[in-house]
Amino acid sequence: MALPGQGEFSLVLRTDFSDDPAWDAVCAEIEETEEFSTAVFVSDPRFAGVSVRALVEEDAAADDDAKVFYVFLADETTMADAEHRLLAVDLADEPGRTFRVPPAWFSDISVNLGIANMYFAEFADCVDGSGTYRGCGDG
Image (cartoon, rainbow, N blue to C red; front, side, top):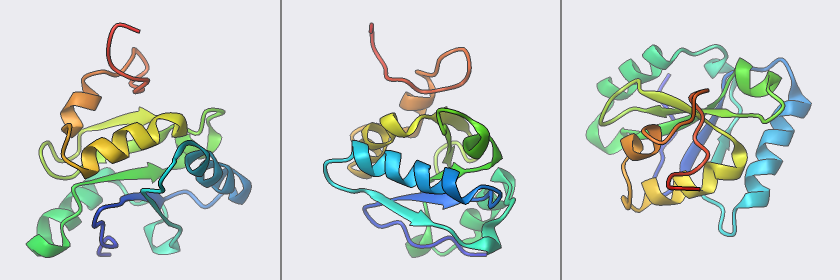
């Protein structure tokens, strides 16, 4: 169950296949917020119901060239949530650490992680009481 290569892009991995219109909405919401697309949308049934633990183990076993440092999951919660909050998963520094992120904030995280301007933990440390990232700072 190797993860697709990441390169300079962020994987948005569909793990729930119960609601096609919700998946389409997630993809559209992410694309609406990005000036330059950094998302790679993966809708492959072999990832149906995959756990964070399984992803961490898969990535840990991968060759260095095939490592994926983080992934965004469109899981059951994403599909049922009015905000379509994705589950951001750290696979590198603190494997298995997660937080939720609405599509409106996807680009902020994706770009900064992609250029190593910020670390996953910096975003995860800025979550609100629901475990959702909505930006860092005073605002």
